[in-house]
Length: 117
Image 1: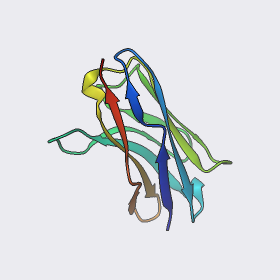
Image 2: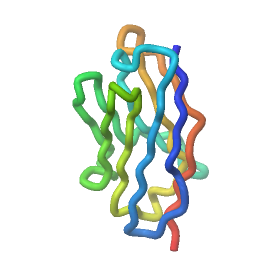
Image 3: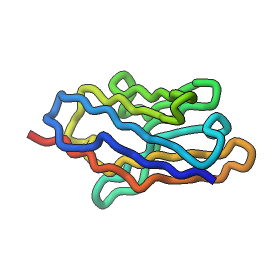
């Protein structure tokens, strides 16, 4: 089992940047595929980016070239660097950990990102 705690959300102007962090505890971090999802008001939760245990990344088309996911296995932490933010990026961002042996998903509590002038 793993516990996930996100941080780094907040209010930012369009064109600005934020970095989200997700600290994992309770299990061996390296056996989880990590990811970030988001859910805007009245919308379904959607995938933003994932990173495998070997560091391979995948991004939603809407964030390619603007967001970067990374992980530090020594610190049990995954990051999401978000640049050139747009109002449509406003959402609650959730950290996800998927155990590679079972495909079981764990979720953080979410952190609000608001992009507004």
